[in-house]
Length: 287
Ligand SMILES: *[C@@H]1O[C@H](CO)[C@@H](O)[C@H](O)[C@H]1NC(C)=O
Ligand SMILES: *[C@@H]1O[C@H](CO)[C@@H](O)[C@H](O)[C@H]1NC(C)=O
Image 1 (cartoon, rainbow, N blue to C red):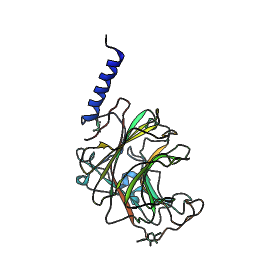
Image 2: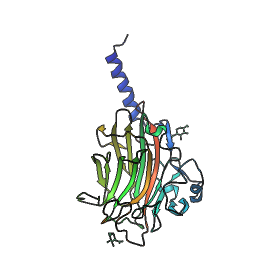
Image 3: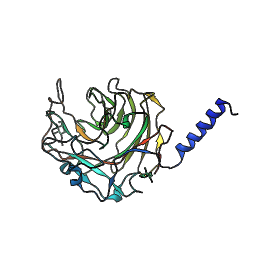
């Protein structure tokens, strides 16, 4: 008979094996884009992304997406021949009555706000890259990836770049990952390099209310860059991947007030979006 402490040691050893090996965890959703898809496929119901949200009034996703060649794929795209996808914004990217925002974001098709992607322990993967031809205006704040609670009252985490509103941003050309917007804790930041995929994995524990960040660039395997941090990830909701540009000089409700210069032609490239079940410790650090 093994003592429970010895069993715990063995269990932790086994789970560390699970963590190191390149392997195939159970997927919760797969937002990687098969090379046989074309932009118009995202205008109609499909099993990758919502065809409804988040997009400017009167626009369709085929106008807001640019599919890149599969060869340009990120860490978790290359082996499967998946292609990165760029999310574009223009002056017309006005969602509902948010006239001071310019935004377009991809939401995983199965992520309806109450599904299992925000339950248990899950690891969210995504890679993000600049488009040097359609640069962001770093005088503004951008939200690139976030989880928004089902009641729309908070973001449980948010990846930003540019000049963060209400803060003194030392270098706006930085990717800054914040925890729950109710306390604004900075979890991790890194220089936003040109021509490079920045690969993130966030282990979100919806039971213990923690977040751990893994990161690498290019084709390097992910490494952990934070401890398991307390972060309130409760409230379920939806994951957003895209370009949400906030105004400058906004007063009060900045979704409706503030300045947005005209003739915007901006985009951010995403690859390797998927989520795996980490309840048993499974995390893919490399393909
Ligand atoms: C894991 O394997 C299953 C079944 O072979 C496959 O459908 C899935 O795409 C694989 N996941 C990854 C991340 O490669
Ligand atoms: C960037 O944004 C600022 C603030 O809105 C604006 O003054 C400036 O003209 C913009 N730059 C470009 C190149 O659009």
